[in-house]
Length: 158
Image 1 (cartoon, rainbow, N blue to C red):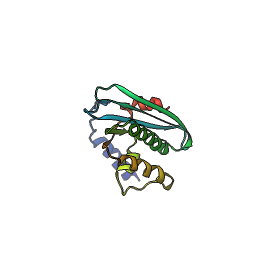
Image 2 (image 1 turned 120 degrees about the vertical axis):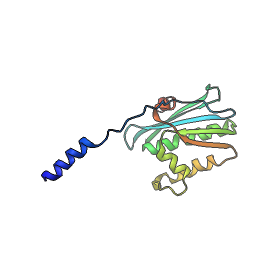
Image 3 (image 1 turned 90 degrees about the vertical axis):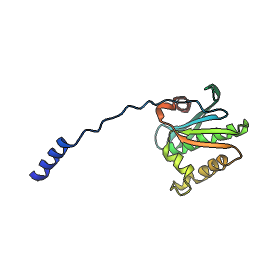
Image 4 (image 1 turned 90 degrees about the horizontal axis):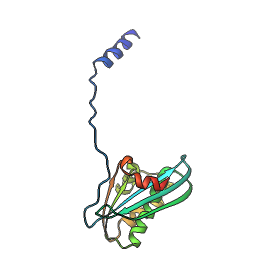
């Protein structure tokens, strides 16, 4: 016991401190001719009252369109998926052909982009709906964005 405690103390003292490198986190404009779709889902509990929101911005950074909706009682990941689905439907209906989507949920992004990802069965239908929209005849790019840079979509989802 004493040896174990002594090892822990020595290990803690001798372990080098990892230096943190600051990183600038911000939203950037999409390249021309892309439209950027940022979405976010929010659930007060998990599951509990949830909502979705998102924005469409052009290559000058101008706000093109925004949306917000109440979703009822669902999980946070279901809210993230619902927000993306609503945003993709909106972008498709508006006739955009070049779109970048950004989500602050890396879990949901992996469900959508990795065909072998494991996901909850109750989300299968919405995941397939989102994938179907993502595979339409448009140029699509999907990526992750830090929550701190997704403030507009987050505000619309709350």
